[in-house]
Length: 347
Image (cartoon, rainbow, N blue to C red; front, top):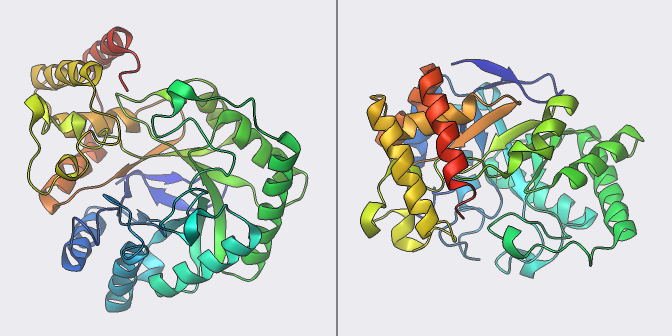
């Protein structure tokens, strides 16, 4: 497994990150542990989670369960030092966590302490804000996104207060580094500028959705990532399983995300289904597993990026892990480029 720098942190992490959001809902504790074991066996040292996990659906009674599963693995294995662990504080509006309250200095402190308890560790390597208080265009909100009501002064004041708290938590040894999630280019630029002005830690990473079907990152954020050494932690590199082909023709395999969340959070659309058929054909023509091809595509992008791979079985996980050894040919990349032009933004 290739190792990559995480931003400017000095941390070296695996070129694939293990996602965990199904552990505790779609997966049992034993199944989550088995996925960690397999990922480590194949060279992964980087795990991502969040206080609100598991998802599908997010429920108040299950919030934190995924961190607990990781924590029980750490306690059983004694291998905390072998892993880089990332987690997140939930953003404003999620009723299942703190009644939807926004991210504040007090909320950050409480959430960090709760995550540390559940993870059974005394430090978090990368602490991330799940989405900004001001809202964002992610989660299929791009179609109606309107920033005109934002209060710039309030946004910068919130960012400054959060950074100062994160700096204090770093000094206390509770967190190592800081990252964002579901951010924009403008937002990330402000976080970086405030850090450079001395208000707190520099953001090392941005965790946004990215796949063959979701390429909003390719413009301004990619340019920022290259010039500012910010690593994209690309979630949903399989577009929530669409790119595996398992939902073709309206199929909803038992126990799958699609069986629980019928349209995959707004991802299943007629344009997306047409795009998926094109990408499945590209993989078939090249003799590639479509899952492995999709993850390898993300790994090969011309900006700092690490895909976050998730699965509900070890067999599924292996198909994504196989991307670590795959470099897509020029012919495949050319076909993907033509498909992207033809299908644009399908959800």
